[in-house]
Image 1 (cartoon, rainbow, N blue to C red):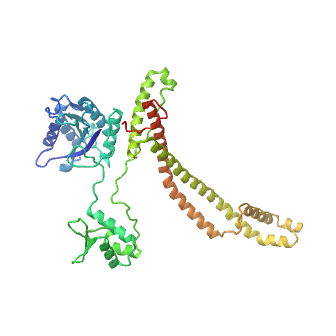
Image 2 (cartoon, rainbow, N blue to C red):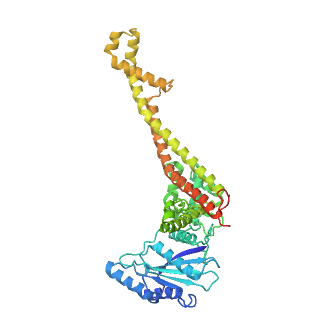
Length: 470
């Protein structure tokens, strides 16, 4: 089990760039905490001179690019990674920290890994240079970087037989902090969410809106300027300070219908991180390649280890730790996808029928008088010869209507409206189709991997068990 946290290191107040880098690297390399430096390793830098090397790269970066961000510059990034007490050796921790840094910055940045053993929990301090090795670029800090680091760390831990935290909860002040999770919404965000909720009730006018805000346990003050104060809030928020769709004019427009706004269902919902794609485990026992090639067998075992780590992360993130629940979820995903897919096929079929139906209706209407005259003539051969094409089109249209069992013909306008509605529905379904198919594929692969994992672990194909390792 490992927890992670990422810091961006800026220039400390009252200190130079060199002093800031030295302070941070000296703290990480503290000999009293790293077994006199034995537990400090470096990548593309010497831990003994890391501060000077980082500083030199920044001078070269400024000289080569001409860019200087001054005191707002990010000098380096600091990752803290802590492990469950008694689960790992210091040497293993250092190796895992190095692997985490390599996978996160893809070997483009120099870094040091210092493993501290002064606490009950062994923990790493990973500091990597914000400047790339070629001194031409700076580290591009991705959104949700805290989540990305946590996921990489979890996967490496699973690959090395270590546990991971199933439901990490953000908390400050210790190594269990998990960055990347959305912080508590601000009072302004909560107020905007409440305004959306009240406006969804369609108040008659602005005064009615204010009354409904008060009814929603939000105190409204009319002193000079209108302000709102919700339960537990210390300082009221002035309506004048709100922006966008939440100004007084915007709210009035939303009440009158002049402005349409899609309300937010959740306040500042965190962005979900998509799991990496994983594949089916290789059945080494029944693989001819494994029997004839020891090298292939070693590779397959490593491949299976990594794939199982990703599978366990996927199952854990989706709250699936029991095989029956996994099977139930897999079947539900298949059923859901089949419903969407079936509806799309039905719409496609109908969209093809509508133009054909329109064609036959047009032909039927156009030849209706001709066929009536033909019928009145007693089905005269002479009349048939003179109007053979029109009569054939009329008969074909009537036959099509009989096959479709149409008692009353729809109008062209009705068909046009149906075509437009089906096209819109198909577009919405396609927005659900691809995520549903992707999730179905993932859960089916996870199900098969989990079943094979239990078979390998327990030696009993039919044994029902959970995947927590207990």
